[in-house]
Length: 316
Image 1 (cartoon, rainbow, N blue to C red):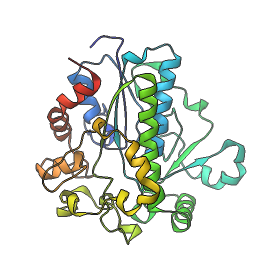
Image 2 (image 1 turned 30 degrees about the horizontal axis):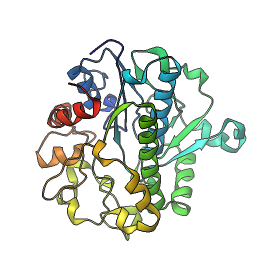
Image 3 (image 1 turned 60 degrees about the horizontal axis):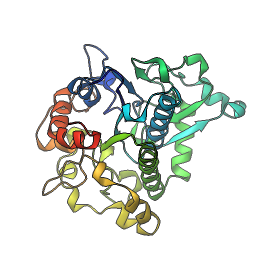
Image 4 (image 1 turned 135 degrees about the vertical axis):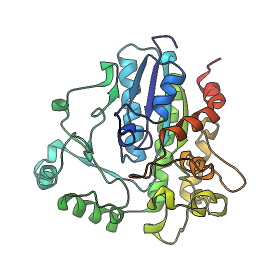
């Protein structure tokens, strides 16, 4: 690949290899493999563990626009995004309202390892300085839920836990989360099409079909460890689709999305599947300690869909 070409990627922990590589932290997920496979000399990973789709989209736009502002040509940018679970939510921590969040702010490790607060441009993994900034320059950021708060014991801070329990108990809406995910996808799609940036998208697993639409706290495949998904993970064709459940407020957004840009794993039981379904069906390895797909599974997933990626990226 020409040295001017830049690979830009984003996603949650399924795209962020620090969690998965015990021997080193060199992002051993699909982003590491795709960088090697297509010999990108320059790369920018905007993803971060536990990110929801609004944050993923916002950081993608920040990365792309910053590269364009630095004078890089849109023809030199190649984007890949793996969307996360729709139940995840980020709440903005404003520097203007410091006192309001003082107890919360003091209780978290801002922009440190495994932090739950992240800005547009913090914790960027890149071999180009064009989109990175010093941690000291980060004045604010988003507090990440990582998912439904009832599921996570890694909220060590009581203020954090109370903050999100309050939001999920009183304001959480599956319909709104689904709508916001569609809007996030459209935001990235529209930006790329406007600037003629080559891109493809995927999902960490099916995020478009409901498992139990009547139970908001047991709604997603993502509320179970991947190794425990069983038939629920690989029989998404039997589950109702969110766009059908929430048709009135989501169908127009759904229709606007170019799903030809997506890599989906599908068979007679799976629809709109992603990396997790592919790994489950093909009995690939997962990390024992965190339930994420091993690097070998990421490589096989990318190889299976390499022709589609090359078509989206216009690689001959």
